[in-house]
Amino acid sequence: MYMNLDSSSAGPLAGVRVLELGQLIAGPFCGQMLGDFGADVIKIETVGDGDPMRKWGISVDGRSLSWAVIARNKRSIAIDLRSDEGRGLALELAAQSDIVVENFRVGTLERLGLGWDVLHAQNPRTVLVRISGFGQDGPYAERAGFGSIGEAMGGLRQLTGEPDRPPARVGVSLGDMLAGMNGAYGALLALRAREQTGLGQIVDVSLYESVLAITEALTSEYVATGRVRERTGGILPGIAPSNVYPTSDGAWVLIAANHDGVFRRLTEAMGDTTLHGDPAFADHLSRGLRQQELDDIVARWTTGLTKSELLQTLEAHGVPAGTVYTAADMVTDPQYVARDSLVTVPDPVIGTVTMQNVFPKLRSTPGSVRWSGPTLDQHRDEIVEELGSGTDV
Image 1: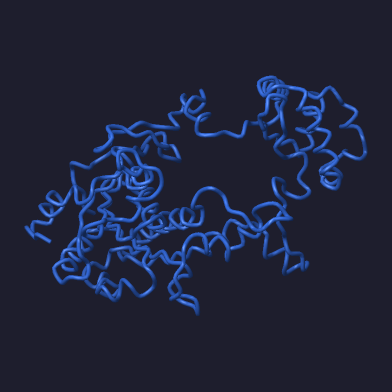
Image 2: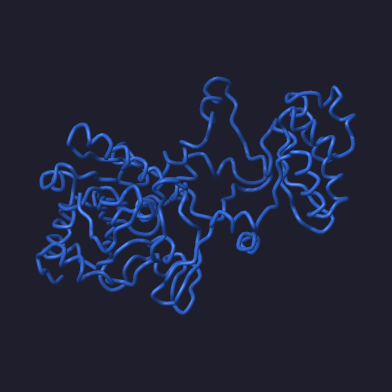
């Protein structure tokens, strides 16, 4: 394994070098997760403009905050991969890397002269993470694909939104990030296998399958019963009460009390224990059959309380509940503060930037955010010097 000592950390992946060839979200999120736990992530960017994520989202003083997060803990070098010199430098870096991450359209890496056969020949221990819309084979393999397409074809969009409205989306690039997580997970599995075989391998991640993986029994239900799940808004059919409920001061509080014991405690909090004894709501199945009726009963109660009163009452009775948070809630919440769920780190352009911390939390070998996204080509000299080549590309 290879590691720049200046980028060392106590994370569990310290000593692992990652070469990130991807751009936008899926490949870079994979790199972000690996870098968070100590890997030395070298990001190759295009000469001139760099990764398009540098211009995405809200910017401060010309600095994309999205870039500051997704490129954190990485070192940047700009290389023209279409030139012989650029490909040569990329190959040198790949030869000294444990993991190479790419999320180009299928076939692009081969056209650049950086395909698996080439990488494996020069370093048989290298793990190649390939993230694409539809995977490396099959009739759709060469199609262009974004995370939103993966969400649609993986089944998530069909399930998201109100039943009388078109399919909706969540407010983040979920399909891309799920693929990035699968890429990081697959890379670690491949490193574990390498300990046994001495060889790297291809980790083939598709956007649509990354979404498909979280759809529970969606296809099982259809094959077994012919039932096709539809959009159900803010509820899961048959799971009640479990919804967002209004308060007297205009807030929304999510209450999850569908378990028999929790429902009993909710009725005690409501001061209406007859609900628990009512055969119409006696068990999970009966409550699910009367979901709307039960939601209306709970909502009538919650609208008589402020958010603070409601949360205090539910907590006192051991009923799981939480406010629907905005970012403004997160930055002041005492639980977020106590667990350092958010962290403020140095930034080369705007001084500091606040972002989500590293998850999951490892008690003995935790990850860390050591710096925010680098400026373009910021680390060229040190990266080239480490290679010992003196290459100026």
